[in-house]
Image 1: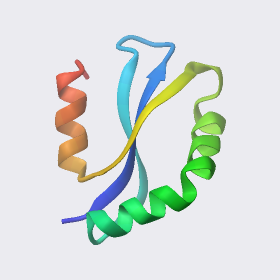
Image 2: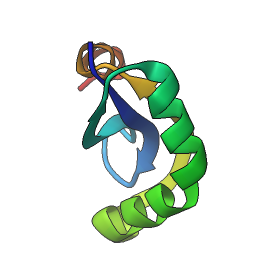
Image 3: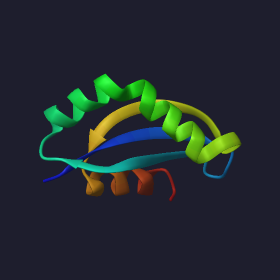
Image 4: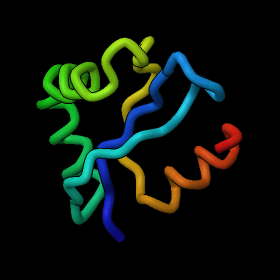
Length: 78
C-alpha cells in the first residue's frame, strides 16, 4: 500500500473543502509523515503557487492512500 502527502485545503470554490495529494509515493505511513514534517513549509508554498488566489487555507496535513483520499473527498461532496 502506497501513501501520499495529503492536505485538506480550503478553496474559493464549491464545495470549498477538498483533499489533494502530492504525486510522490511512500512505502509506509511513517516515512511519509517524516517527509511531511521536514517539508511542510515547502509543501505549503507549492500549494500556494499551484492554486494561487483560489487557495484560502490549509486545514490539515496527513499521509493517506489514494483510496482514503477519494473516500474523504466523496464524503465532502466531490
